[in-house]
Length: 376
Image 1: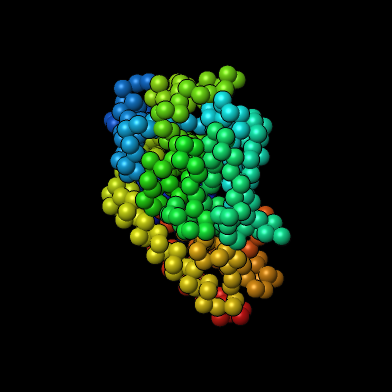
Image 2: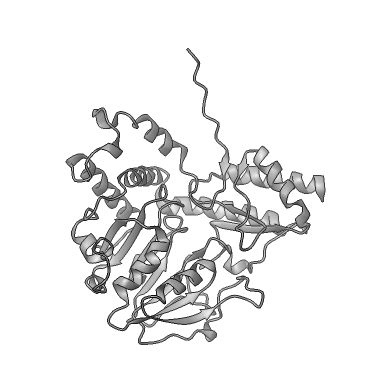
C-alpha cells in the first residue's frame, strides 16, 4: 500500500478561476463521497430536497450577513457568469426607457456596454482610455455625460485586466461614482465582492461571477433591490428573469448545486476569519506590500495612477520585456503560478483575492527582488 503524502500546493495568482481557501477544499474533499453520512456527494442530491435546500438557505443567509444586505434586497444565485449578466441586466432593467448609462473604466466595462447595446440605447458616460487605449485612471467627473432619462447607471468596480478600481467606492471629488438620485446604480463587483466593506443600499443591483472571491466558475450572484423586480423585457428567458428567480428562491431551474455548496463553505471560512472587515485589512496589507516593491525600483513599473490602483489585481511590467519569459519560467519553478498578464495588456498580473494569504505575496516579493538582483 502506498503512503499518502501531503498534497503539493503552490501560490496561485490566477485571475479566475482563482484560488480557493485550502480549508474549504479539504472539507469538500472529505465530504466528496459521503456527504452528511448519506453515502452520496452533495452534487448528486436533488436541488429541491430538504438537505440541499438547507445548504442553499444557509449560503444565502451567510452571504447576507457578511455584506449586511438589507431586507428589501433579493439575493439570487444564477448561472452564465458576469458576461451573461451583461445581457441579463438590460433585459431585466432597461425597460421602459429602453436606454441606460455606462461608464467605461477598462476592458470589462467596455464589454458590458457593448453587450447592453444589443438590447437598447447605451449612453457612454465617459471612457477612461488614453490615446493608446490603456486605462490608467478613472475618467474625470467633469467629463461625464449622463443621460438623465437612462433606466440605470452601470459601472465596473474593479477592472481585473487593467488593474484599476474605485477604491472602496468612496467619492474622490474628481470621480465620484454617484448617478442621479432616482437612477439605480448597477455594479459588476465580480472581483471585489467580500474583499472590503460595501454599502449595498447605494446600489440597485450588484452582480458578479463567483470564481474570484466566492467559489468555482459556473455560479453567479445577483443582489437586486426588490422594487426593481418585475421590469423584465417580454423576451427575457424566464430562467434569467430576476422576479421569477427571486420568487422561486433561485430554484426555478436546476442551479449549480455544487458551486453553491462550495460558496457556502467559503462564506463559513470568511466568517471564521473575522468577516469582511478583517479580510479587508489583510487585503490592504498585501496590496501595499506588492505596490511598494514595484515602486521602489526601476526594474518594475505599474501604469495605473496610485489613487486608482486595484487591491485585487496588481498589474506590473518589467522595464526589459525580453526578460518576461524568464520571469514566468522561474516564478513558476518557485511555486508562484499564473503571473502572466492578460493578452490585451501584456506584462505581469498578480491576482491577490481573499484566498491568497499574506505569505503568498511575501513569497512573490522575495522572488521579484531576487530576480532583479540576478538580471537587473
